[in-house]
Image (tube, rainbow, N blue to C red; front, side, top):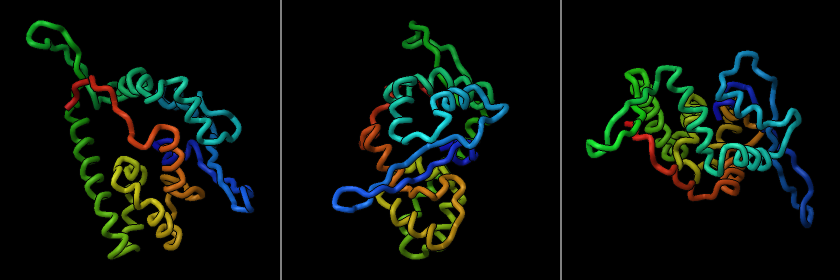
Length: 208
C-alpha cells in the first residue's frame, strides 16, 4: 500500500458483463512509471509487476512465487535491511538461556518513536466505525488523513464498503488508495489470495 500512497502504482477497476447480465469487476495493478532512485526493497516489488496492467490476483500470485506464500522472504531479505539502513531497526547479538547465540531485532530510538506514532494512528483508525454513524463527514476526513494505515486495522474490514461510500459521497481525494477501486473490493481480493484468517508471521526476530 505504500506504493499506492506514493503514486508509484495504481489500482483500476474493469467491469464486464457476467452471468445473467450481472456485471463483474476485476481489479488491475499497473505501474505509473519506474522511479529513478527507488530503494532496493521497492525495486524488489516493482520487479514483480508487469509493464502492462495485470489483474491484482495474478500480481499477488507472482509475488508469492518470488517471496513466499506469506511474503516472509521479502520481509527478511528486503524490508528488514531497509529498516536497518534507515536507522529504524538494529541487530543485537544475544544468548538464549545464556548459552545459545542468537540475533534479535530491536527498534532504535527513532524506530521506537515511529512505532509509537503508528500506534496512535491505529488507535485513531479504530474510532472510524463509530464516526461513520455519528459523523460521516469527519470519518471521511480522518480516513483520508490516515491513508494506508487503514490496512493495518483488521477491525475496519467490515466497514470498508460503508467507508468507500462516504468517501465517494463526500468527494474526498483518497490519494493513498486511488478510489477508482473501493476499499472493500481490494480487501476481497487479498482475502481470496492470502486467506481471510491472515495467517501467521512465523515468529522470530524478537523485536520490541
